[in-house]
Length: 63
Image 1: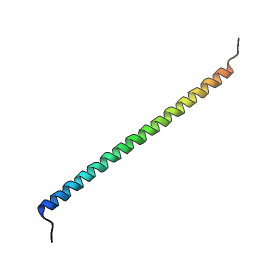
Image 2: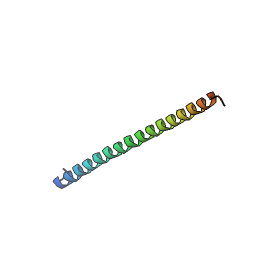
Image 3: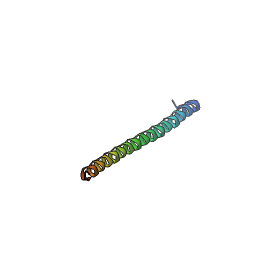
Image 4: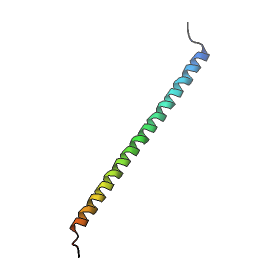
């Protein structure tokens, strides 16, 4: 038995909905990944600044 036009439309609507959801999820994951990457870069920078500051302080000659 062939599907009716109404059933075809329902299937089409569901497929479109699922496709939109997939794009939204993909965008959210990319955003999350980018934020994690930025966070790691910030930690690396803070660590390097802290390290450089400590090295500079060690090089200072006390008066």
